[in-house]
Length: 339
Ligand code: KG4
Image 1 (cartoon, rainbow, N blue to C red):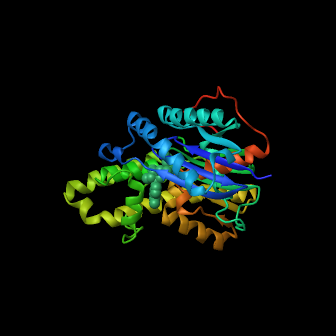
Image 2: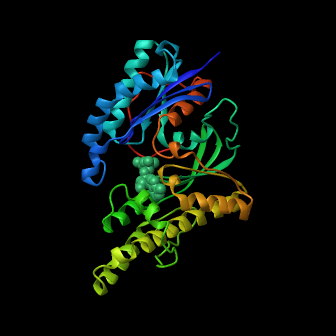
Image 3: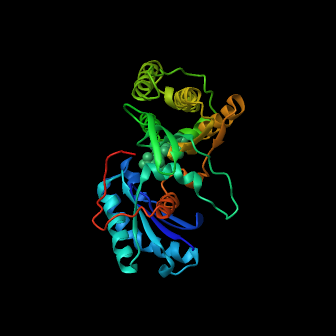
């Protein structure tokens, strides 16, 4: 029997829909929201309004691109949380309406689980590069920095997480003090290419176990700028590439050190990365380097699946469908981080 899942993602500022048939992606459409650029961050109320405008065109387009009729859908999967409540409500309400009109089951999806399961999306029927269980997944985004032990599609344990800022937040906040736009992570990444990663030293946390902290790095970065600006008012402009490269290399070192510790302690050499920060080229290079140095088998998502997308929601929905793990029509969104 063919299983065709429509996934809907609206947890933050991207409205996305995707169709997955028997684990193979047929289409994935993402509508971003440029309205936030002027504010230096996502404005929740504007995000939910933009989702309302985008959701019908995005779903219509994704079904058209999949080359199917909506009557062929087996179920509707949607992001239930965590995320912005107003944004989630748009996707959840739309999913409920569509599922009810088509008389198909609804599947609620945890956004964080979906990021991890993005590694199982097949872009062609014969693609075969999914991780094997158990594996470790470094989930790094604007809101999360976690090390997850993944034992099965529905068996994930967070073994380490940030006790303050997320890695993406550290990039964004440091970029902001240098006057770079939002989100700052990709800009830092771009400028770092021509910089010296050893030009500046910023503090690294000393925390037990597999937890992360990025607030000390942020403060250390800020103090370096403050002190150097006293001597040279053009310090930032004159050292932009080196500052970006040094910041980026410090974040990557912090992330990889805990991941290596977890891999050694648990003796798991299958290691994946997910979330927006997994687009960072220095982090991706570090994964390849660790594969050579420590015999890791690494899984790095295609760029299209690093940021929020509905293909990861649809694939999670597919695995839940196989277990008949459906949700009721009274499902409500949740905003808090949980796995
Ligand atoms: O997963 P994601 O798209 O969404 C949320 O967390 O909401 O992650 C966004 C984060 C932002 O902090 C952004 O600056 C960061 O991912 N990011 C990057 C890069 N691309 C996105 N950070 C560093 N280097 C990049 N190339």
